[in-house]
Amino acid sequence: MRLTDEEQAMLAGEFGEPRRWAMTHQIQVGEFFDAADLVPIAQAHIMADTESLGPAGVEFLERLACHAPAQRRVRVPTITDPRGLDFASYRRLKQTEAMATIEQRTIDAFTALGVLMTNTCINYQTVLPPVRGEHLAMGDTGVVIYSNSVFGARSNFEGGPSALAAGLTGRTPRYGFHLAAQRRGTRYFVVRDSPRDLTAWGALGAIIGRRTNGYWEVPVIDGIDRAPDSDALKHFGAAMASFGSVALFHMPGITPEFATAQDAFDGPPPAADLLTRDDIDSFITEFAATGDAVDVVVFSAPQLSLMEIARIATLLDGQIICPTTTVIVSTSPEVKSAADRLGLTARIEAAGAIVTQGVCFYQSYAREMAEANGWHRLMSNSAKLVNIISGYGYRPTLSNMEHCVESAIAGRIV
Amino acid sequence: MPTILRCHVGVGPRVVGIALVADDNFSARYDLDRHRGIFSRPGHQLEGQSYVDRILVLKTAKGGVATAWMLHDMAARRLVPKALLFNRVNPILAQGAAFANVALVDRFDGDVTRLIETGQELEVCPAEGIVTIRR
Image (cartoon, rainbow over all chains, first blue to last red; front, side, top):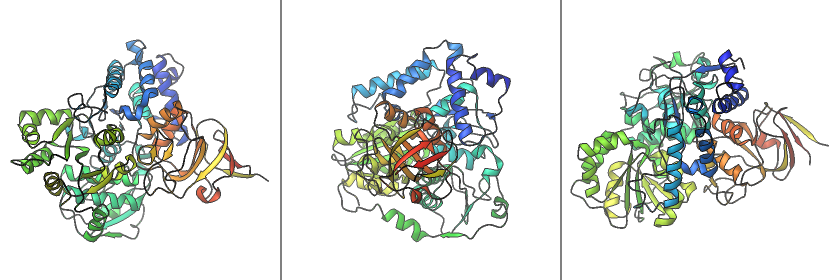
């Protein structure tokens, strides 16, 4: 890879050990993907929940944090994905003191590195939205696909170590979706029936993800009859990334890079893969378990916007959740603060639900929570969550927000 | 007579081990019980099987970014595959393997899940982009 004089100096350790490690790591990854050089970035976003980090990851962060401030502090704004534990609610969820301790050690290390603990996977809705053409190093697949697709920014999936390295050097290897040629369409989908709720948007994203099934593919989606709102695109993109490892889609006329499907491809579009309401309904039915007792209902993955929180508050007004069912609503610290101020949190918790902030269910020791609370059947309106959570021993059911709330009140899936 | 397979230059050390092959994909978060060292996702072709010290041969990476940290933690606890061979990986697996110093290669001439069979002994040389089927 071509390196500037400054990058050579970082590699030689002239800017300290943290930046030497970071540059070494970025060159390894860049050479794996045949990157020609490094590209300056505007922001980095680090996924580093403590379940993923493990003790070894935390100790790695603590070693970096021991260096002098001039050597250890990030060079560009660097923020965090959801954490593994919310200190305000972890005991209610039967998470342990050991989990809280390792969480605090991680926060201390990141803070010493100059990282802003935003603890969110909806930073594009709540912190600093990306800009078209801006190069980024985003962790969290949902953040990457939204930043690339809806804003036209440029990021690869950056795992925690790589996002931290990008924060320390202010650069990332120029490969994949940093390159215009990689952003052209490769698959073509035509939607006959546009989704009408967030769950259906997630299901549509999941179906396209399954059929696309590859990071280096770029689906182009036609036929959407009106501009979806930000929450719809959030669920759509997060599910597509989860089911297919997809990092970029185009929705010509809605997303910014291409006005028509013809523009999105090198040459004429390939044969269209048609998607109907039956496809969406069939996908949701895969997870059906009507009549089963429901142990935990989760609204998360991605964290909820203020609008989603307000909708849940309205659905729960005057209701009491079944005592044998736990309801968890997860959002970012910014949205939680607004929900508190607007009285939404109080309305939700009056029904018996738990509103958590700065965490996301599957990043919060999901297996240990299941064992401690005796949870098996999980219900959610998030296609992304039901995809992830079965590996943690849950039996997931997917349904829309209204059915999830009705089921939580009944204590069984309606 | 050893069979030599060529692939893109990878990351991590040269290793020798026994192959565990499936026509399926991989995510450390989605598919593994990392405490027990087995595939735990219902429906995964390797469900219930141990991945520890095996050379995993799979199609591609799927899902989220957690694998980047998880491989590092799995390596520290010595509950980690010996190497990872894929048709093509996403950045997360490459970043994770580089960080954890786990051998990883991809981009073979052909479908690697058909070129290698479970139980074969492999030598993986990431620096040269060569996998040798020894027996």
